[in-house]
Image (cartoon, rainbow, N blue to C red):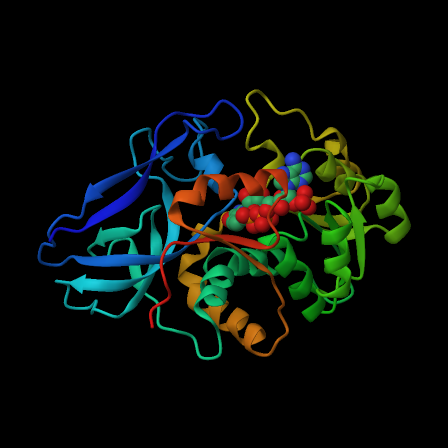
Length: 339
Ligand SMILES: NC(=O)c1ccc[n+]([C@@H]2O[C@H](COP(=O)([O-])OP(=O)(O)OC[C@H]3O[C@@H](n4cnc5c(N)ncnc54)[C@H](OP(=O)(O)O)[C@@H]3O)[C@@H](O)[C@H]2O)c1
């Protein structure tokens, strides 16, 4: 009997927020495998803030998803059929592929991902695929953080931000997390070990940062952009480093985005501002993942996974990233974990 697969397709470019017409779910037969191909049964899919960027008409850091294409996403799954010599039935494989429950590949998108001793599949995939390497490279390579530095992190309770603060603590930094609401801020302090927190929804961020870092900030790790970035630029130390990891507050903008208004501080404080994209660091993944997995196994990195069940719920889940409705690393569970 022929098998069918469900795939999300890019249907209509959103003007502003993603809506019900942006992506559509279609069911199609799974084609017969050719020599050199294998069939992946998806288990987890990562939802990332940049998914909205891929749907834009901006000139971005990689090919955008084109209207009519399957929606792109990081997936981990189990190989359930194979005509490829290196991928066997029962192997786990992960890669940048599509929002689908069954995927045919030839080893272009997927690579084998053996289980990591002591780590659950969801934890390994959720933390080691995007968020962990991004946090580590962004803070240590781009931000050049060192012991004694004061580090500010925005969207600090999100997937990347929750890890940046802890990696900074591991390296002897003092950390200030900025997040929205009492629950997230409380969690940052009580569970993640952030030294200080700022609730940008209920506090004056510049005033609070001045109180918490009267001598200024050495490293500002930006995930949000807009007013929060301006507040960060206002309180930098001379020769501070500003890491532009993400600008999520601008991804749904339908027109030009103003600011940052405190850009003059790049001169006044002689700042270094650097953006980066984690895909440029793929060659270093083995080393980065080894280090992160070690900290996870030792219990030195804590995290929350926000797992939404069902491929059909992926679009609703993605919207959580832009409203702050996610609590930690957002992902979709598409199928059962291999027995
Ligand atoms: N450069 C890279 O290679 C790379 C790789 C991965 C991720 N990133 C970037 O890292 C950032 C975090 O991405 P993620 O996928 O890990 O998501 P996430 O941090 O888990 O979730 C996004 C969080 O951003 C905050 N947020 C959303 N809209 C906001 C707004 N308008 N103003 C202020 N805060 C807002 C919300 O937290 P609150 O509830 O606290 O508001 C939300 O929970 C994104 O900017 C993303 O583009 C970059």
